[in-house]
Length: 136
Image 1: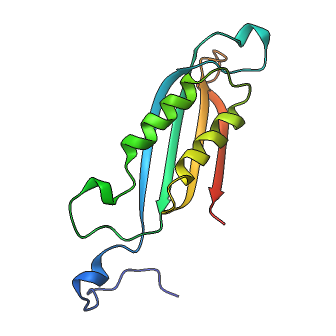
Image 2: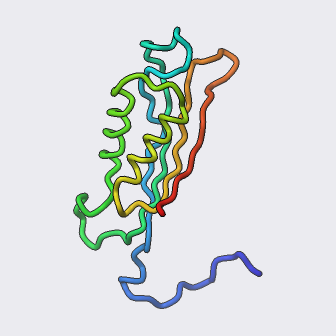
């Protein structure tokens, strides 16, 4: 089976050329967050890095109106609100809350969220978790 692209594109109408789905992402969002299981971590705001990829099960809209798409500004604002809402014990909990935020829009089919705690050990750039969630 060949994995090469065809030399010519098949004939199609404008509607066929519009993607049946698309992805929205937030990359390397670094925020202060009160996170950790140890008493010394409670009340401290340490840096976390968040990456989220969101698969939207809808075609790109024909118009140029941001109200018709899943808006990454809404996702960034939601992540900020989650990290500011109070202490979180586990990076898994933070990642799960972010995934739930991403899936709150009914057009979202799936999401992949990575949360990293930065500055934990001098020998590591980060430690963290990656979770994936799918609708249904």
